[in-house]
Structure formats: C-alpha cells, structure tokens
Length: 210
Image 1 (cartoon, rainbow, N blue to C red):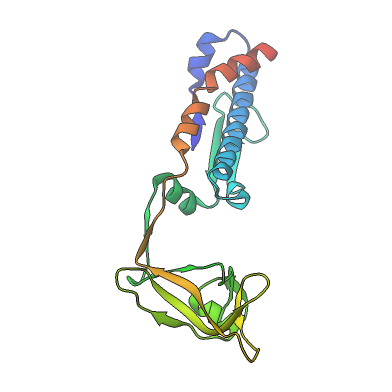
Image 2: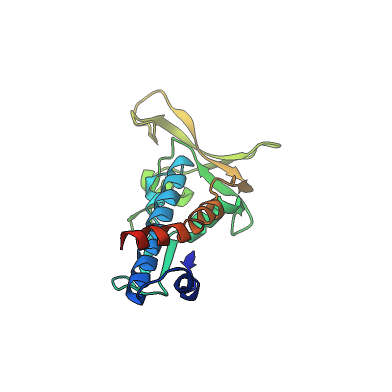
C-alpha cells in the first residue's frame, strides 16, 4: 500500500517555506506508515493468526532520511500470499488434485526432509521422523484418514512407536480433505482507508508544530 499527496494541493493551503511544507508532509507520512503497520499487526493477532505472522508487516517512508514535498508512505507484508488468503477468504486445494493432509495434535508440527533436516510437517516427513508407516483409511461420506498402528501417545500428546509389550493403539495422524476454505479474517482495506483519512490532519498538525 502506498500513501502520497500532491504537494501543490498543500502549498496552496499552507503559507511558508517549501522546507517547512516538506517537513510537515514527510512527518505526516511517517506517522501514517507507523500507524497503519501497527494496526495491521494488531489485526493479525486479534484474528488469532499469531505474533509471527503479524511481524511480517513492514512500513517505511521515502525518502527515508531527508524531507520532501513528494514524500510517500509504504506498508507491505513479507508474507503476501498468506495475508492475501486471509483477507479474501480463499479455497485451498491440493496442487496434485488429491487430498490436503491436515495434521492432528498427535502428528506434531515438525517432520524430516529426505536430507534429515527439520521441515514443516508432511505425511512423508512424519514417517521419516518417527520411522513409522502411515495407513490410509477411507471413510465414505466423511474425511479419510492417515493413521499409524502400534503407537502410543507421549506425555506431550505426540504419537510414537510403542516399545512396550502391551497398550498398542492406532493413532490418527492426518485428516484428509479435498479442500479447505479459509474464512476472511482480515480487513486490510478498512485499515488503509482509516489511515488515508488521517493524512491531511497530520500534515496540519506537524505544520502547527513547525
């Protein structure tokens, strides 16, 4: 998102040197950039999407150090695809046209890559991490499952190989669905319009302080 203003509009309203006008405009744009970034970060947290995603929002003003009558504020996210998905409410499908594998609490959040490195959990990564094999369970009219036999739950609630002589269980590791619809949880346009409406008032405020 970019915020800017035509300096000629301001010059007509404000009597004074171009330096003072440039200073007021630049200071206003810095306030807009900081305010919008703060609000968008707060919106992400309030939507239950976590601090980590909230910190992907960035803001800056150009020029970054000098003042200018053509100053502009920029706010963007370093995770634009995720932000866009939650701001529009999209349907996510498997890129291979089969199933999306949704991990259960028993799966954990970390898997192992073919090279043995930690990676985001996947069915293959889970098998490599645990040394267990997943079994497909088809359920007509309901989501299918990937389960692991001969398991037990650890104290952390994770499925692991049962090395005891008794107490074997079958754990549900992934739930398979053809698609997932994300609910719209962010309203970026509303936040942007709110701060766009502050620009003129902020310029006047900084002019008064000059």
